[in-house]
Each structure stands twice: as C-alpha cells, then as structure tokens.
Image (cartoon, rainbow, N blue to C red; front, side):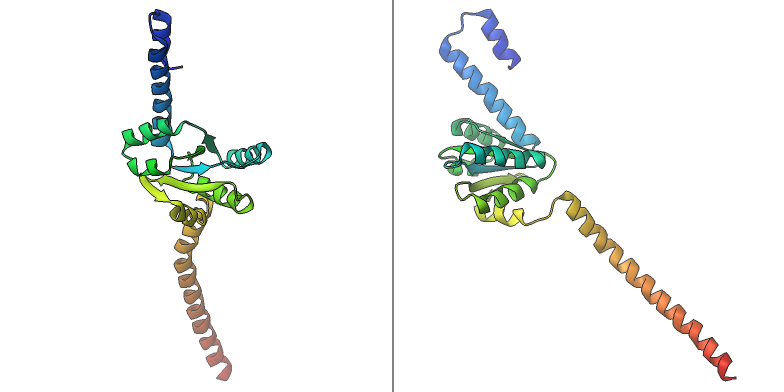
Length: 188
C-alpha cells in the first residue's frame, strides 16, 4: 500500500470517496511505473478464454519472464496519458489485460501471438515498444522476431562470416602456393 494512502487511513477523518480516489491514484502510479520500466507492453482482450486457458497463458508468459495484469481501462488510460501514450486509449475498451515484458521487448508479442493462433478468443489489440504505440499488425510483425539470445547469435554469425571467409581465402591461397613449389620440384 502506498505510504500516503496508509497515512491518510491512519489519520482518519478521510471520507470514503477520498479513500477511493487515493486508492485509484496508487494503482495509476503502479501502472505508470510498470509502463516506464517495461521494455514493451501489449494490450490484449481475453474475453472468452476459460479459466484453464487463462492459467495456461499466464504459465507461458511466466516461462518467458513476462507479467500479465488486469487493470480498469480508465486507470490505464490515466497512466498512459501521464506518459504521453494517448494513442493507446482508443484500444482500451472491453475486458483487457496488459502484458509487460521486462527483460525482452519481443517476448510478450511472441508468446501472445503464438497463444492467439491456438485460442481465437485472445485478441491482440495494441502495444507500446520502445516508447511507440503499435497497432495489432505491428505487434504481430514484432512477434516473428527471435528472442534476445537468438538475435545475439544472429549478430555473432554476421560478425564471424567475413572473418571465416577471409580465413578460407588465405588458406586457399597458401595451399595453392604450397602446391606450386612441390609440382616444380617433382618436374625437375
């Protein structure tokens, strides 16, 4: 519980509506912090998923170190406005969940897109990646990217390719020059 809210409750004399407003502000602050600290966030509609399917989705997300939270749309709207993500507000209708990727910007989109292929009830709506609001098509496009380790291995492969080609050329030249003196010696 937020320290300010805790002090208000202890002091007393606070009306129920003031307590409710303070509680909502605590949640808005939590959402704001999560959006600021996450590498990406994806808004999904989960209407129609069974409890078992929701648990399976949460398990899949946890395996990738991704967090899924359900908040009131109005509170997400306030937090998004505070951070300048006003464009996300048009996607905040119906029962939504926000999926936060803390260590890998691609992980939420990848896990959600894979799950949505098997479960049509899960609808990808929008997302925020590197401070930009993305629509459904862009989120699906991002979901095809490999994870961080995959990207590192691709980069390493790109960096090693020219070096290994150069080494093969040097070896081929050395082999051809080494074979020429031997042929000359055998002919003499």
